[in-house]
Amino acid sequence: MIVNKIEPQGYCGGVIHAIKMAMDAAKDPSIKKPIYMLGQIIHNSNVIKDLERYGIITIFEEGLSRLLLLDKIHSGTVIFSAHGVSPKVYEKAKEKGLNIIDATCPYVLMVHKKIEEHLNKNYECIYIGTKNHPECEGVLGISDKIHFVSTLEDIKNLNINSSFVYATNQTTLSIFDTKALFDEIKRKYPNAYIDDKICNATTIRQLAMENQPSCDLCIVVGDKKSSNTKKLVEASKNKGIHTIFVENLEQLKKESLDGIHKVNVSSGASTPSYIVDEIIEYLLAHNE
Image: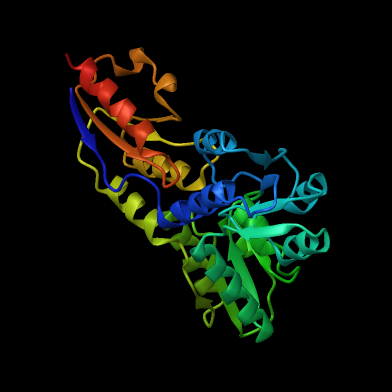
């Protein structure tokens, strides 16, 4: 079996930044305890388990917003995840007297800043994102005047009567899908300022999948909740390549390798390198 590791691999800068802030807080005796993670720091259950070993408590419940999750924290330190939070969450945490550690990805903070700037200039702001994603929750919490869209149909249903339109997006979307949405916005609102904010790490990985060498199977490693990882799976499948999505070695079924001679392995920007390495070692051993 020939195994091709599609680069880049490992954490992106935003994930490294968030994990380091959480680890530093856990090890610092001067930081108020207990330490709570508001939502999942990144979308990877293995990373969350690792942090919990250092005493960091993850506060998460499917369907609950960050604002409501804050009601479960009454003292100590709260860490805001890499996905960012709305200004209302920040203010509520301050009102509760919590020590705040903001681990928001710098790329996400830039999106917040740009939207706030254009709202203050009386622009109509269109934001492309994934429904119920925490990054979108944080952005949409900035103002109820933001026009949220996910599909071409959403854009067609917009009714904006202004020549000042600003359009931006969630940082972990598909570069291919997003282009089509921006094109539709530009068609409908020719004067719109298009500000594509898909982060560099996401873009490079998707392009690597688009240009991956021929293979019998592509394995994408990452958490099922990870937006950027799911987009890698989509990019590979759109190439007509047989692709499977696993979170770890345990999920890789031996029978899925029957008749496979050439494998490409990719991973999301929040996937620990050691998990990918375990899978690659297994694949190479399967060769023997």
